[in-house]
Image 1: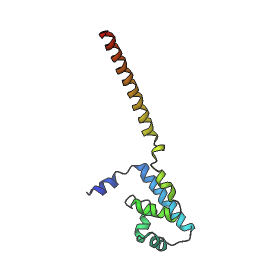
Image 2 (image 1 turned 90 degrees about the vertical axis):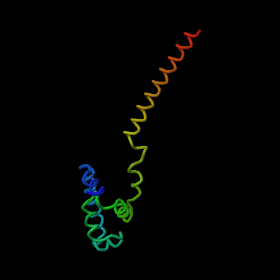
Image 3 (image 1 turned 45 degrees about the vertical axis):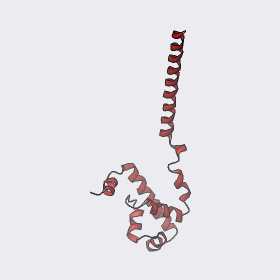
Image 4 (image 1 turned 135 degrees about the vertical axis):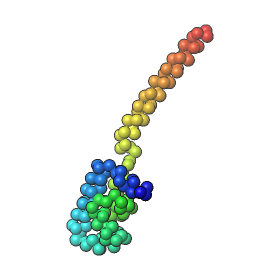
Length: 121
């Protein structure tokens, strides 16, 4: 089994559901614009079978194709915000915990240094 097929087989169910929803939304947007799959595929520079897979939310379709589809719809502005570090609450919480531990360690070290100086005096 290739690395890519191993990676695809381990996509979490929540991520698969999100891709499926994205594909459905892209298909609906295409239909609302009254474009055929052939027209839309040509505009994206992909084959019709790839477009069909995209509209099903297939994780093997490249991120670039999804991004291009969003761009064609005028919806690509939000892509860069998907992994915005300012909105990564888990990382922010980890940074706060680490800073807290560091503050405690520094206070402890400072206290130990003061005790050592007092013993020397």
